[in-house]
Image 1: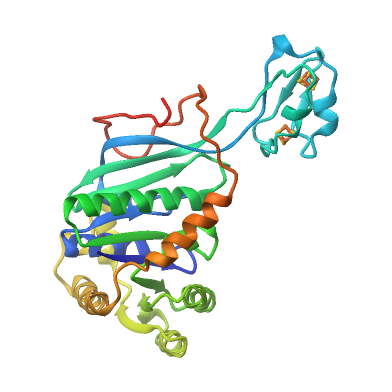
Image 2: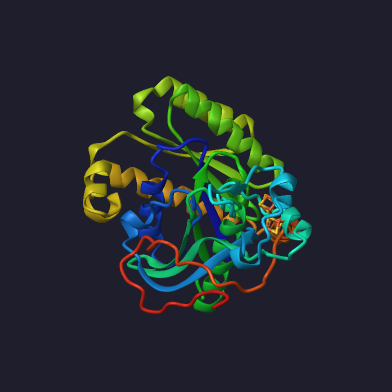
Length: 338
Ligand code: SF4
Ligand code: SF4
């Protein structure tokens, strides 16, 4: 099995359009949308949700009002100013300020504070016209996006194993933070999409440094290369110096926008130069993938260790429903821990 992680140093480089085209051209891949903070691959893939699960991560303190004696100890002990004293003298905890440290729980003399798992989002398995897709939504303000990305990738690998698909296409988040690290860790190839601007060049360098740090093979595609040919060539030159292959140039064309308006990838709705450039780029990527090692399992195992060292508990708790996710329908709904 090969895993192709498609990332960008910054947002707005056209990464998701390229991922969707690659999905159409691959025909037999599992898609993993790992941009869990701002997922948008679903806009093109039109997923039909078949399975969903709640993502729990961390804990939050909740005061049981009938058991509280209003001693105020929790408020004085909380270092995050998360405990409020209302006008009527009752104490409550602001869930957006609570860091889940547990100090108030252990301090409360009346044992009046519950400490349930925090619902941080949901993840989904969907069918699309390109093949199965695993995607997720992190709740607003929720943390641990790297863990959710890890969960999405694990489920994508499980799907690939059980459906005999040899390729996972990962749509990674922009930047070099925790979710980006989780998206590329153990991948067969990291494909960075860049645009020819000074910030695009700078941020691409950071992504390639990240891939090099984890010992992952990398390649670069310059999107909208004709907007600044000199800078595009500079980006490719820098990439080669960092050991990354320059595998494609895609010009700025209105066909991409027109395809997006139709909720499709460019290779599905036109056969002109834009589609031809994407096809050529995909062929180059395929050649690299064929020579790349399968998954870097050691990297995955190492990342699992890092993520599992973070605070994590498994007790069940009755929690409110999260918002309806991206996608059209839920044929089957399974709540984790329900
Ligand atoms: S420490 Fe316990 S009893 Fe005291 S105010 Fe807080 S919740 Fe109430
Ligand atoms: S768990 Fe920690 S952060 Fe949350 S209210 Fe209690 S003391 Fe404050």
